[in-house]
Amino acid sequence: MTQPQTHLNVADNCGARELICIRIVGASNRRYAYIGDIVVAVIKEVVPNTPLERSEVIKAVIVRTCKRH
Image (cartoon, rainbow, N blue to C red; front, side):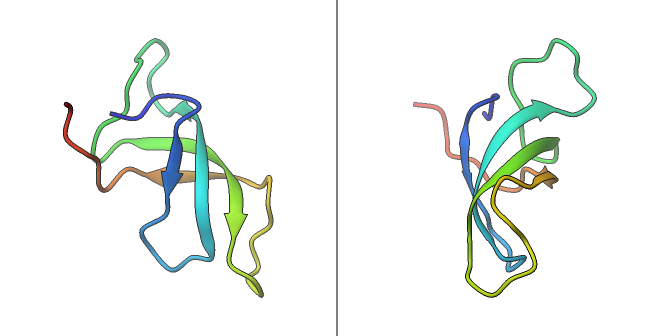
């Protein structure tokens, strides 16, 4: 379950390492995003020598989450 202000690790090789979720797309009052949902996020950490920059706003897809405890 991902909610706004959650720190996310990036699973692909786009150049970003860490994101922070800002908003869940398509949900005005949903609290959590699950696998397959699109979120708006801001980049907090990038790999050197990539075209991405910190504090850039992007859209991302949730592909992996931890189980609830």
